Image (cartoon, rainbow, N blue to C red; front, side, top):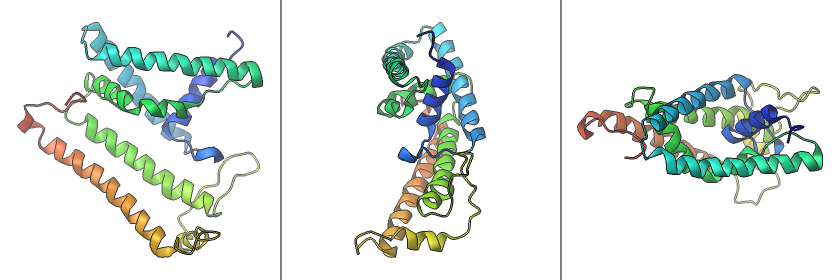
Length: 217
């Protein structure tokens, strides 16, 4: 246990949990991860405040989430014993995304204006998803960008989307053509806009619900 670089393991777990591009190990810009890192620190601070107040809503979810993180730490230890690699698979924590979202919301609402926490959080993740999809995933798998010799990913300049559409149809069944790809893309955008509309309505109705807009509601 003393030989494992636990700081690197924590960094890799956080990075691969916030956004990781399938088994190609694609990543977004480092400052984006740092931004979400500061948000997580604020949420932890808020949870500590609630725990100090002995609010019962924090402890069951916190204990459940903490026990799962211990399992991830054990996985990291075994991985190091076999491969001497101090990394942690943050994607396993996806199965706890619901209690994680509740804990993060409760924590942030303890240190930030309650009215805006859910809405601003949704906007941040929507922006991350839109950027990663259109400027990382699609260009990479369409062959418009690639890894440099130093391992870094080239920047996408926003050109060649028509070419990307053609390349994504290669080696696919005949029914997966341009109409299908464009249609699924539009559905993706519609679902994303729907999330923003739900949060906008939540903020608008905040006062009408007696000032309650937290994770428990």
